[in-house]
Length: 429
Image (tube, rainbow, N blue to C red; front, side, top):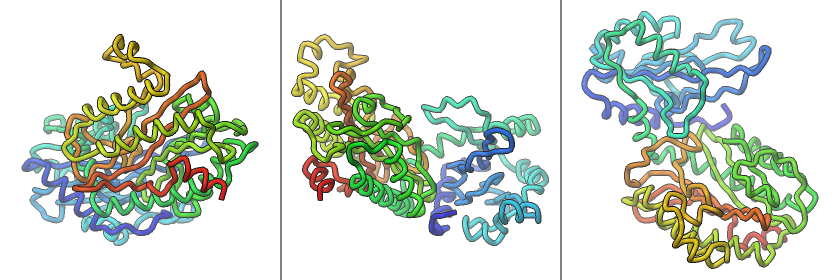
């Protein structure tokens, strides 16, 4: 791993929180992600299952965590199963975690090798009244790939068909939606690295540079500061490309007079940063660019104030839509007649602002969390309104990462310039 050692207290407390959500006699089981193949004997870089990491801090493949608070043997209340290092693994891949190291990382005292899993599982599962199994229940999840959790679920239900099975995902969505102080520290570190990268790119941007050169500046700054990689495929969209919401080609020349939309984030200790800014290629906004930019910025500032404990995401997005409607009328992009005749299912403002304003962020960029509950202290959200005008070649989005506080929110990305004057001054200094 490239990140600094994480205090095992984080994972110990996370397991305690999980235990309070499990009914009497319940056991929960979590699997690591697979190492995904490419072609021939190639593989993609390993990405740990976020729930397993959240509960154990173990960043190693083929790991299994069992949490069974009411186990008859106290030795089995928390169990980690790991791949045992052998000479071949040590020579070709490097040594895996030892039992002692695994305990230091996770705080779990009982460590078995994976080869012992079937034997130990039979002993403990027969004591359990119910078994909570994990699955990817993110509302946007559409992957056709069968995961390790999927295969495990099939195996277990075939081997122990009379057992009572329950879903772990709703519990994990509730737990992970509230960030602890240790998690906030890690997210703040990820955001600080992203801030360095954005500031670096602001100095590098000039007419004639290619979008992929800017991408290279980001990854250079990420890696030199201990970040693993981009937390998602970066969007570096100059000119009209910024009107394509998920533009990822990043292969065009940045031209004098255009804006560049940067939607970039990094992983640090498996926690994500996700930021969007728009900068003028030549260091100076045109009058129209500044007009549209400031409209987005006004919406963002008010939207940030609406991210408060007790507010509800569904109502929040309606309020942001009203803010954007007023700005679009002022810009001459829609008029009051458009609003009067709009389809309530697709309001008039959606022609120029067609995506949501906020999503959960944390161990995943689009992190898990319940959308039908009120906001709470410790929730982490993005805030990212935008205006996209293809006919003018202008696409602007401004995004920050926020932790909701009791009184004041923590804006983890506030040091990345976003006022017109700040941007111009920094780029030209």
